[in-house]
Length: 386
Ligand SMILES: [Zn+2]
Figure (cartoon, helix red, strand yellow):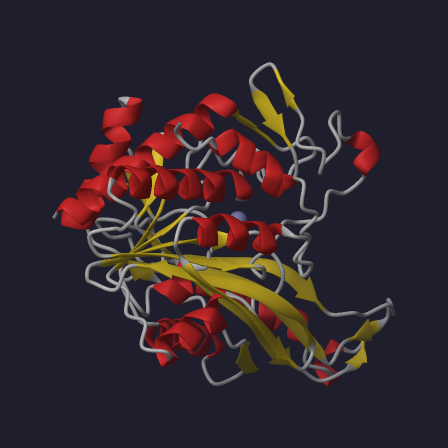
């Protein structure tokens, strides 16, 4: 009897694991993987200012190559539960559709990975020809400080070495097989600050209005594209998201103006080079006559790319054989835990459909769960047959 990804997904969705609650989801995975011969460890990480969060690491096999299947069991809150047609943690199936918080993001794809692993092990004498591990966090949807980033470090300190990783975030815009992610853009927040001289609005010659200056600097910063993109990335983009003066008085020229922005950047430049470029544009526009500076926020979201090669092709061909579609190799979207994994091994992302993420009545077609399990199963067969 093949493992049933729909049953596993239902069991997982029934666990109310809204970040940072474990909700029984990791306990369930622990039981299932232990039953299949995995060595399972549960670890809780904590840090001042953040909730302690439980995580799970399970491995079977000792040899190389070592494939990591990874993801998160925490989910975003359901919002107004009265708005759900099927209650968010009831795991109801209606007309071939499974409803519940986490159906696509990402308990569904974790269920498919578990079912594929059980089937693979069942068909191969209970052991992989190499090592297979599950690295599952309960802290992805929150501030993500007590999850994957610490779990990877914890595993590395225990001598765990990974050759490749597959993260199960929802990657397909329309249909299963549309798209896999082979990289992600980096992210950088900043605030442009211009200092002027406060004064009466009727006597501008006695003041220095920072609002005029910040407008000019913003235009100058955005006047030219940052770059034109690369083979695998779109153009980097700087987007101003807020202009803040906080001035409630009509006859006052304020002393300071601030403009917040975010940059999503590709692999044309390093983060440092990017900051220098933006500062050079501001400096040129300021021409030594405007007092300005940029406050850069710390960030752990760096750009990365897993270039097309044998591993990407192995995953892509498994997707093609099951769905008939050749997935687009994409680097679009926000950041994901892949930004941490890339420091340990090449990582790609492939999961379910992305439209339903975080929505009321989040759902997944049970056919997609079956097909995704078949894809993961093929990946395991090929990976360990190399
Ligand atoms: Zn997710």
